[in-house]
Structure formats: C-alpha cells, structure tokens
Length: 515
Image (cartoon, rainbow, N blue to C red; front, side, top):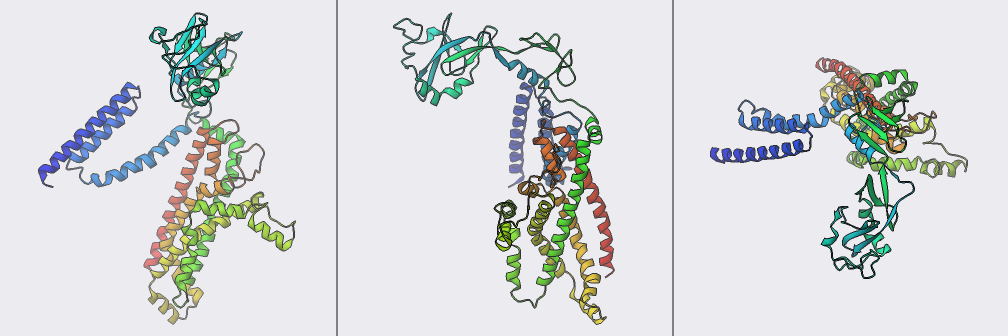
C-alpha cells in the first residue's frame, strides 16, 4: 500500500475512533458516570498520538503489552489496595443514593390489607391488558405497569359487573393459563396508587402496599412510616438517635482501621499465623518433593543407554497432559474416606475396620494435598531438568572422571551447580505459584477440615483460600475489605520472597562462570 493509501486508512480509522469516543463519553455523561469520561477521552487521544507522532513509533509495539499489563495487573492491585482502606463489606456495598433507593422501595401492607380483584386479557403468547377492579372503577394496566385510558379499549360489559367480557376481542385468561405464561412478568409490575403502589398479592388479587421508609432530603434522614422513628445519615449508614443502625449502608474511607483490626482481633491474626505457617510448608514441600522426583527421573532418562527411553518419557508426562481440574477431582475421589479407592484397598487387605481419614484429619488432609500436587507437578520439573542436563557440556564430566571424581562428586560439583543456574528461577516461580495455588486447595478440601470452631480458616487453608472465604463465605457477611487486607499482605510476602530469591540466584551465575 502506498503512502496515500496509508494516510487515507489512518484518517478513516482515527475518524471512527473519535466518533466512538464521543459517543461513549456522551452516554457516560448523560448517565452521570463522569469517572468514565476521562478514560474514554484520554484513551482515544493516546491512540491518536501513537499513530500520528513519529516519536511514539517504538511505543506502537509496546502499547498493547502495556495496556494489558495495566488493565490486568496494575488496576486490580491498586483497586485491591484501595478496598483494604475502606469498609466495603456486606451492608456497605451500595452508594448512598442506591441505599436510599433500596430502603424507600421496602413495603408494608396496609392494616387492614386492601385487595382488588383483577382479570388478565390476551392469549397464551400475548398479554393485552390487565383490568383491576377498584372502588373508583376498573383500572386498565398495560403489561409494563402503565395505567391506560379505558376509552382506548373496546371493552364490552354485558352484565354491568365492572369486569369486561373481552378487551379488543381478547378473552379473559384462566388462572392456569395466566400462571403458566404471564405470571412472572405481572409479578414485577408496580402501579403508583395514592401514597404507595399496587402489586400482585395473590393469583387473583392486586394488593395495596405503602413504603416502609420515606426519605427526607432536607434533614438527610430516613423516616420509618410505621413507627415514626427517624434515622439520620451518619458516616456510612443511617442511624437513629438511640444508636440503632439501618441497613444497607454505603462504603467509606476508613484508613488503617482494617489493618489495626487485623492486628488487634485474634480471630484474624491468630488464624493468619496458623495459615501462613502451613502456606509456607505447603509451598516448600510441594516444590522440594516435585523437584527431587523430577530431577531423579530426568537423570535416569538422560542416560543414553537406557532402553525404551522415549516410551518412559511419554508415560511420565501423562500427569502434565491431563487437565489439573480433572486430575484433582479424581484424586479427591481416591482419597475419599468412606468410598475412596485407597481405603477400599486397605479394607480388603487389612479388614473392614482399616482405613485412613485422608480428607477428614488435618495431618492426612495435608499429606493428601502434597501427594497430589507432587503428582501434578513432577513432569514439569522433569522436563526442565532434562533440558538443563542436556545443556551441560560432556567435556566437564570427562575431565572429572579423569581426575578420579565419582558419580556423587560429579553430581555435587558439576551437575547440580550448573543445573541450578537454569532451574533456580523456575523453582522460585513454582514456589510463588504454589504459595497461591488456590485451585488444588479448593477442589480437594475447600480448606478443611475444621480445626477451630468459629474460625473461617481450616487445616489446609492457604492465605488465598482464607481470603476467599472472608470475601464470599463469611458467617456474619462478606468481609471484602478484610479479604483485601489479606490480598495486600499476600502480595507483599510473595514480592519480598521473590525479590530475595532472585537476588540470591545471581550468585549461581558466578558458579557457572568459574566452571
């Protein structure tokens, strides 16, 4: 394509991009979501600058990676840190205006209850109108809940009972037909009526309901229409003068309150200490056992005199080829205390009372997890070790053999040091991965078994699964802000461990240079 064609194509693309940006910015502004407008405008301006500026030419290749890193890494990290400094949790999720809307939409029936019979007209596939019989006369309501003019319908009433015989030629629907085809849609209807609204109360009646709470914007308060109690807006919820709170509330900035609560409340820091200790043991043992097993198999398979070496390699990477989700669920079935394969075999050998509480006892549950994880990860260690072993020059082994070094001496002075130059960063990455390996923990044990009544942290919970439980499985509600605190702590721990480990691995490069 010549220069003119590229210019025309660039103009068309930038024109479409500008129109798209203006359209979405206008929609966001009309919706009152002003936070979106700068991102749309700056994004379009940034793309235009990349395409038009010669200085930005190198950034054209880096921009997609930087964009994805920002959206998928930096934004979640920053947002997680922000949440940890707020009270974002059950009861404090909505904005203040949304909380007011929820409260004012709550309803109570009148005393005594007021009910009006209704008749629906249409067919099984089409609902024409709903006619509600009120003391003031029939009320014609559209399927969307809008009150219609009775004069716009042909509604003959031969017996004069106030209930039309048909509406625009559509007969009245029977209860069964209405229930099977139109009940869910009609159930969502709210029809303004006097001080409240009408809604479906039974299969035959609409009921009159009034709002439980009323918002007074002048006093910024919620008034209970049943008791007259006034709840004034506080920092994060409406509170009465006697201290009674009203839920839901709204999020607010609390500073270091969550971190202080983590330090002071034994429910959190004691569970954190227990979970953190197991988390480190879990990651270290998983990496160590899988690396030792993978390295041993790699050394064995690296022997050129071994027969059927290719077959053994193919069979030993089978665990790596099977999706981890399937493998974990299979092993969970094997370790089942009551009907699992392992206990069935033990019972057949040692008697009906034999058996191990694989997933019901803390020690055996941890053993089962480490065993399964080693089975899943040793093929990876074997493959990387094989690659590293084949990169070691054979002349080094020949020189060592001439000097009289035995197999163990050659392994400790040549194989292992040179192997660690290539494998050490991968071991660090594997440690970080296993430190946050939520998948196997959740699919195998869901953090159980229970070790302390009232604590969310189970015997096999790692920090990430514990944070997940706080966020979504809280007994007293979902504590998103405290889960975010744990997320920040996990991030700092993994970053520090990885930083120290990578710094130490630089010393291994000197080893390889000296050989």
